[in-house]
Figure (cartoon, rainbow, N blue to C red):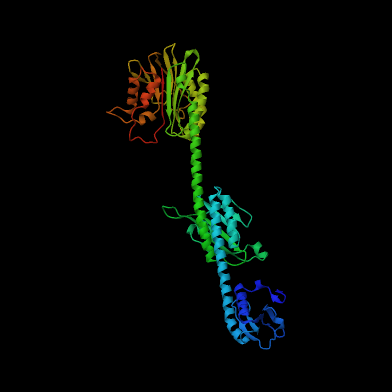
Length: 526
């Protein structure tokens, strides 16, 4: 392309144009750069002509070849020179033009390299911003893959993340193909490059053979770049947490070692993000579980009756689960004829499963205590109602249920395997109200039986507690944990039920007791 017979300046490199202009001014020279005809009879191609060249006498012109080491060979024509012979100008200008072309080539090369490095640095910075601005790793992975594919000129990309719960590689993102996000791959798969890269923790540049459909469409094999996503903690060894793949080059070439190095740097950033994402999700999950358990604890405590407000008798009760929730409970009932129903239960094990059984028991007991005429009848109904749940959870339930009849002066009770039930009298003596039957979940169809003792309403105390209390106390001077509890209750037998509970729970626990001991519960009724 020429303007007024002269090639547009942008066609030649700037160093070459400056060199030509300098010689034109210095020697009053008229110059021309041409591409010699490659075939006989063909015209030369003019690449550069000085202004006014058409009116110059070319009889004394000088010619010399120029090898620019980029593009086609050129020929320099010095048509005229005012300050020196054209041949001398040609001899001086030819090597200068060669150097100018070489400088232009180097400038172009380093400009390209700088542009490439800038693009890579910009990509790494962009990925850092993407990863730092979201907790949604899947959407971030898709954005990252799209940028990587564009910068490295890939056709397709995929990012796989290792899931610890089922030991699989999960396809977290895919670009350039119909998305199959959610597909899982075994790290032990011997036939896939992704699994091999994950297992061995090293990058691979390979060739992917086209499918039959791709071959029919003229598809050739694609270059395949697979890099492990590694995480290097501050302490401990690095570990592989995923794999990032690029499949096929837009230009049909192969991925290079430089591409692998860049992708490895990107994978390092992604690895840290995957680990941070995992830790954040675990933290959020733990926080959510803690809030849910705290709510479950509050709800469970609200299911227990407020013993201090129980009008039919003086009473106090306390439940301290070893975890947020537990399987210990107590219940109080105002029954017809001025009678008082007193229940305390202990579900085997502790934690959330036992809390569910406890909740079912309390709900059912609230109904059956008013339907059945006797403590044995109440336990019979509870056993029938809970048998399937107790069997499926492989748990059992010890439970004491007694009915105090102040008018008749009697306590009638049924005890399904609960070891810590006592009647405490005014003189400080205590009477164990022993088991009448096995625990719920073990008792057969012929259970349950009843027993009774005389009851003095203003003098006697019904004292019930679960085995978490004595288990937490060490023997002192040959006195067992249970006896220490009973002694503390006896010393405070003329105090209020609340003060008796305080005295029992104030006993110094066993220093060797496990922090994961059983739930602790006590109930006092006068």
